[in-house]
Length: 343
Ligand SMILES: Nc1nc2c(ncn2[C@@H]2O[C@H](COP(=O)(O)OP(=O)(O)OP(=O)(O)O)[C@@H](O)[C@H]2O)c(=O)[nH]1
Ligand SMILES: [Mg+2]
Image 1: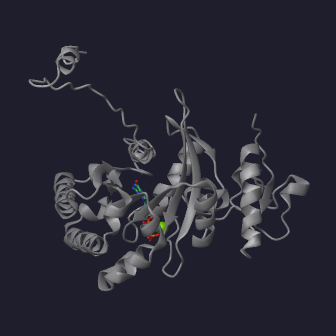
Image 2: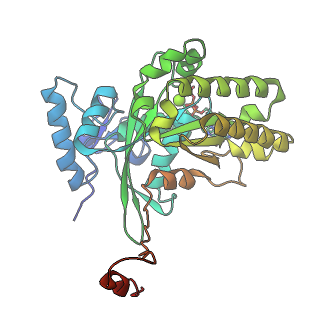
Image 3: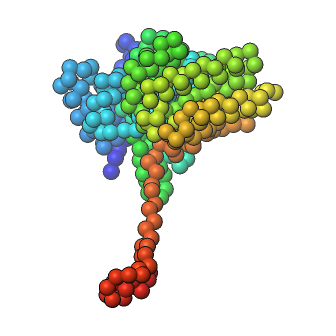
């Protein structure tokens, strides 16, 4: 039986909720944006996590504390436990970080049926990224902090479990990289070959910014930039290496309520066609529309996320075997006799 262990710590100097049980700002602990869960979420994770921490120490790497993993830590995790690496690819503001955060937030709130939250080593990493979307940030409109240029790629860990039926679970490492890094690849295509998450990915998620596709002033440039990025990645065989490319139209709520909706969808289809042409036969390509954090009530939070997750689960191949007995015209009498026996 697993038990939830919620030993909260605070990032603020002088605030010690673990001793006093109170927040220095007088907030309920559940609303404090600076808190993080010090211990892993359940007993099963305590065991796994402590070995993870030990190995980090053995390698002289910082003690793991719930923050997003750097590349070395992600590699250690992959070697020890394995995971499906999901590489989010997209230009600044496309919605990469928001997508990762919403996977965590919605699974935790049981709003991602049939997938439920089953643990994370990087709760603090998620919470830091989610902060600007929460009421406690003081914002009226939820937002996500920019992943600024120069920030090295990081990885957020999430374990999801399918509810009902077979209770299958999946370990995910979700990449978080600044969109500017992808812009730099346009002038220096070889750069994308140095992105560890792109090389290790089991799935590449290419995010197309819906907000840009509805705006005819910027749509053409966005489309052209996407095509050039796909060319650069393809030049080094990086996209086909993962076996799955998901092309995702983000901020679908904005697309849907725009008077240029149809035009934007046509533009998205053109991008898909181009990608399919480029990658034909080398990789499985799926396409989705996503409203990870819609601003209008016609959409539910995370509309479209479940489709992405479904693709990340390994597909079960149901093989059918048929016994084929060729009809013999020559052979020994025994050959001819057994050849008369059919299924
Ligand atoms: N309306 C709407 N806004 C969204 C949606 N998803 C993300 N956004 C907003 O789009 C903006 C950019 O999202 P991010 O997740 O920071 O984008 P990013 O790709 O990580 O950008 P960089 O970190 O700059 O590379 C934020 O203000 C989000 O709140 C959505 O589904 N609908
Ligand atoms: Mg970001």
